Length: 94
Image (cartoon, rainbow, N blue to C red):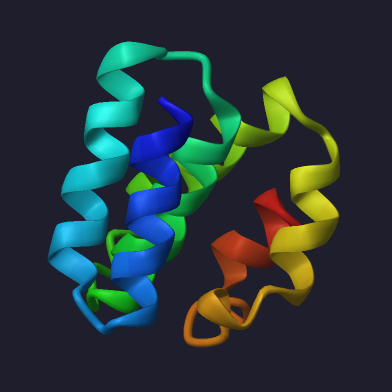
């Protein structure tokens, strides 16, 4: 699972967002409780222009439920810049 998350992070840095999404999907298939995979999937969905806020927030909340520090990280993460000011992000994440 970690290898797929790390691969996704590398793909993100290369601008291959769809490939990064596919990698974290594999990590989630291996471990449906792996918070980093859910957090990163939320990041990559946002970067890919997937502004289904409900879907992104669901991934973030899953991550937060397993690792509460994810909430504070999401508040500052530049990957969420385009959605951070939405009412739903403010309400659900802070």
